[in-house]
Length: 301
Image (cartoon, rainbow, N blue to C red; front, side):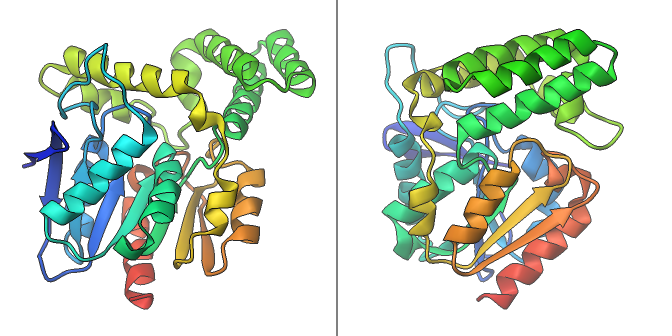
């Protein structure tokens, strides 16, 4: 069961599991927004906490954490400062960062600001460049439309991807394509049969409608800011920590260009591909995911 910690004037909902004597993992969830750390705790909390102390906060304003009001500002730095303040409050000397998707973007920024707080970096299906990730998603959406029989629509998006460079236009097209896919939109994010896992967790949560509203508000604020569309490849070069990138073979977010940048820029690196996963490796191959992370951390301590 999680609890609230007062962090920089906001109540941040945080799950803490495992023994104090174990190496510490901070889980940085993706989004922006979403259901916070709920799915991570459900699928990895009991697994990883056997070997690690797990700290898993819902980010500022997200899901169970205190709401960010309409008139309040939020920045990427606010989220990172919350992590660092939480580390101090929990009397943790150093921790390793286990991040997912947009969380990988935050992890890179955190490691640049506070390198002395961090031991290892683990990225699960990260996005280091939102514009590249959204182009890749649109490409996957176009393929899915063709697969479902909408060849004209799909080929239209392929043509647009060759002609359009502005990330705002690509974002609009992606939203349109996902809308056209309708209930099939999750096909591009998952490998397994059940592609509604996140939605099921959300629906089973008390006051889900209100929580979704809070998380959506954060997503809108951070995407509107536009900074998340600036890549962090240069900052990635500065991260001098053992770094593991976990890639779901069928995940569209971490495209080949981003993996190549990771390989070229990070000195102490490893890439592990999970053949039976999309964007949520921790859910689709939970036991292997736990084992890979456990081995990696213990080999680099």
